[in-house]
Amino acid sequence: MKDYVTDPATAAGLQVDEGNQLALQKLYAVRPTWTAVVTAASALDLAPYCLLHAGPPFADPSRPSEPVLASAALCCVYEGWADDLSSARKLILDGRVTLRPAQDYDVVTPLAAVISPSTSLVEVADLTTGSRCWSLLPSGAGPQIRFGTFDLAIIERLRWRDQVLAVALQGWLADRSIELIPLAQAGLRAGDDLHAQTTGATAALLQLMRDGQAPQKVIDVLEAAPLFFLTLWMAACHLMLKATINSGAPSLVIGLAGNGQEVGIRLSGSPDCWLTRAARTPTGPRMIDAPARAAPMLGDSGVIDAAGFGAQAWGHAQGLRELMAPWLPEGWAPDLGCMLGQHPAFAEFALGTGLDAGLAQQQACPPMVALAMLDNEAGLGLLGRGVCVTDPALYALPGLGQPEINQPDVLATVNRAVDHYERALTGNDLAELDRLFWHSAHTLRYGASEHLYGYTAIEAFRRARADSGQLARHIVERSVTTFGDSFAVANIVFQRSGNAKLGRQTQSWVRVEGEWRIVAAHVSWATT
Image 1 (cartoon, helix red, strand yellow):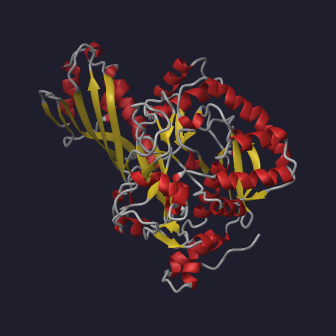
Image 2 (image 1 turned 90 degrees about the horizontal axis):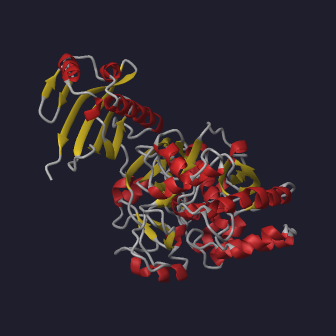
Image 3 (image 1 turned 120 degrees about the horizontal axis):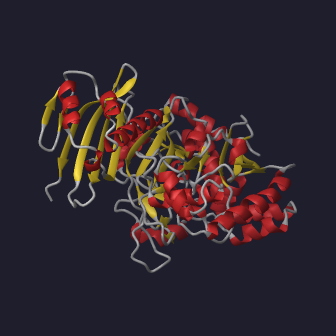
């Protein structure tokens, strides 16, 4: 395998600052190689009853997007945590199953696919450094967990993947490994973009497997699954971008993903922080004639586009460009000017690499992601091919002194505190409600008909209020945002039984002496 170290952009005289150049050299030096098939339980340190999903953390992990909820429920049944889908949904909605971003574990997962302990993963390693990451092992043709439906036939497909296909591949890979860049090159030469289409790359992999006398059941899967190479290349792109962490290119995008509610990016200079916005919805040609609404951006596969492939490669992939032309935004051009360099291994295709958030924010046409469209209601699954134009505001870099938004550990802690408050309120647990409010004369609460100033007044109001029979409510919407590690805002829309009116509650939470406390609250009823 050739070592790629010289950036054609630099050789051509383009100016790349020293920090960016160092990061790019580390990216170019990665030799992503398929080395094994493993289970998530053996490769990852998963806590009990923990599932991994694509994209940034959910603002409320017990209220995921519907396609992710469907896949998570199937995983609960598959793992034996629930007897049926109804009880599986309840486990998730009650918060007894934890949903975590897959990228926290160096895993990238496609669309609505959820990773559970028994899930078979492809392991991709860098032959240069030994760094590793993982993605989903494809299961061939048939019902797919990545499409986000409640189809129970998927469980049998998972069982076949983990007990038949994975075992066959484990044996075949035991004495060999497969470098992925040559396969990607073959795919690009065949017209692939390596995201929406991996037919050529999969064909090159299939030929390699035939030459290596892979088991027939493996050959059969690749012959029927032209997108088999996709998750391998997702892992490869994750591995290449991961190599740039803290290497002098702080605004280099190393993760670009959606969870069906929000889209987020991770940057080389702050890899543990997600910068998020409301997810936009992909558009494109539909495979089925149905009025179903497509889900907002879902999946970790945007890492491919961040690395310079996928929609960023449509200037090269002519067939895909022509197919998607009606859905390309005004002002789109093959080179959007967002990339820092050009990977030497792909110089013949004139593709940029290394999406820079600062450059992306300056462009009239923001970066796009090649992305399949899924039914937002988790009924129909795959709707068709699509393209998602990302929000330019997503690439706004935090200024000096500005707090980090929704740090995963802080957001999880505040969500737990909000859960405690809700249980205490509906159960009229006065001691717990007292504990959760800041004990200060500066605390305030504006209710539907009362203005309460100071902790003592709020405490007295609760003791004069009716019992819990009038406090039960159903949460319709919920949003929690944290700012740094000491301040958060929680908003909910709720409804009480027998009352069609919607209530609204806003709370300001502050970490006081290490504990999260409500310092201000406002409750009102919508007038329409």
